[in-house]
Amino acid sequence: MEVNKQDDYSLIIPLLVNNGDVGTKVKEEQYTNNTTTGTASFISTCFNALNALSGVGILSIPYALASGGWLTLILLLVIASSTFFTGLLIQRCMDSDPTIRTYPDIGERAFGKAGRTLISISMNIELYLVATGFLILEGDNLCKLFPDIDFDIYGTRIGSKTAFIVIIVILILPTSLLNDMSILSYISASGVLASVIILSSVFWAGAFDGIGFQEKGNFVKWNGVPSAISLYAFCYCAHPVFPTLYTSMKNQRQFSKVLFFCFAFSTITYSLMAVIGYLMFGSKVESEITLNLPTNKISSRVAIFTTLVTPIAKYALMLTPIVDTIETQFQSFCNKRKCSFLIRTILMISTVVVAMFVPFFGNLMSLVGALLSATASITIPCLCYLKISGIYKRIGMEMIIVWFVGLIGLIVAVVGTYVSLVDLKTHLFVAI
Image 1 (cartoon, one colour):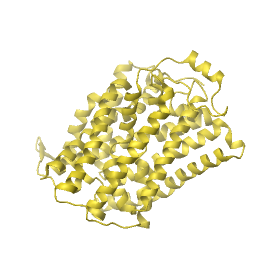
Image 2 (cartoon, rainbow, N blue to C red):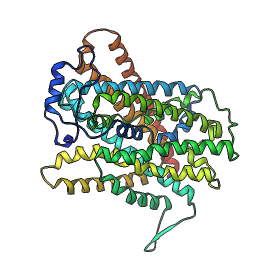
Image 3 (cartoon, rainbow, N blue to C red):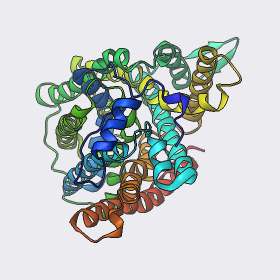
């Protein structure tokens, strides 16, 4: 299989060899001969992975819990365990062939060109919509802080949310031009810190600023369970980025430890935020918990202002795989640096347009979680691993577990997508 030029900065070292199913000594020798050494350390990779996993999902997780009730906390753990497991499957798939360097490469190794195309499309649409969600998030929170600000440009009145989205895009643009994982890790560190600060600020608002934790909530709300699961899946939608992080490491054999630490940390923070937010606001919690916070309190302002850091910290990490894919198609026609700048600029402008026409953060993230995250982060890794490893040919415990996890992803995708589309359609009609 031919290695794409887009992946010249990526590297592969074998990991998680499994009884000859995936990876052999011959493969290890091929890795030594065909790859070079990465530059990202264990710590910087942890920051990048945490930044991908712990992001805007922390704001919507209380809304997810409120949608489905306390019982869905079990489903949060199921989704977290399933996505951690499929992260390990991605490693094993990459170990099976030294020329596998990206997520689409895994699809091609398993199912040929059709597999590459399917994964590329789902991965890039997912990352694109996540980036769009960042802008909606920024517009909502800036409007919350400055509700009375209007913008007039040459006599034309511009809505405050639209203007704020444009301003944020201009601020983000310089960071989107970066593609070095070691450099991005410093930006990622600020994103991880932002999640911790938001969690701490929301807790402070509940404990010391008079809001309290008096809401009891519902044990289960069956009609809201699909939406809750979809939003939980969105919180763990980082799998398209994992191959890039893995191949950028100086010591790729430590990547399983990176995954374990990052998934454990993210799940703890998500669970704490879900419980705290639901106890504070109950069924009245907004799709972004910062919209519930009173702006006259210092803790609330800290949480809202910190939320504004997230897109700056995460946008470049989400944008890089999309740009790499597009660059591959045009690399023979234009200068790489100029082409990269043009592609990134066009992508950012297009996300602004989409954010203006679909300004519903909760519904958009639920749709992304169901249609794309569950597919790209659960079902596809399972199918690719079954095909590449060949374990589908023999009945065993490993095959049963992989099929079971893949089925979970399929159910979430089908049911969650239907419910999300119905909800989005309802909100659009109401807005019109």
